[in-house]
Length: 133
Image (cartoon, rainbow, N blue to C red):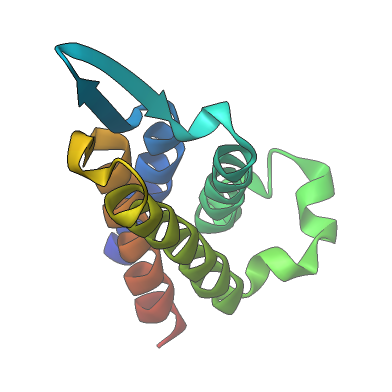
């Protein structure tokens, strides 16, 4: 497996894990509430995209073991990785902006889930671009 594919696999794993980590926390009067992306529809979409990214980056390794993967031709195209990773990046950034600038934003802060999905999606975009070249 090439260096760029390994970067892509790590980025995909970060996206997947980021949906389960705490995305934002709110602290008011000494009480802290935490929220992860998996609690909502956005998180399920991001989790699905992370799994698809992982399958695409590992396509060469799993095509011999899983027979139906060979029939899905879109998995050979690295532009798909960049497009869906950009979608994850957009969802994460829009959610972060709404958390930071919405009502009660002075009590909220972004957490590990935000940074994990952000870094993972950027890694997938870069790896997809490098593999394409």
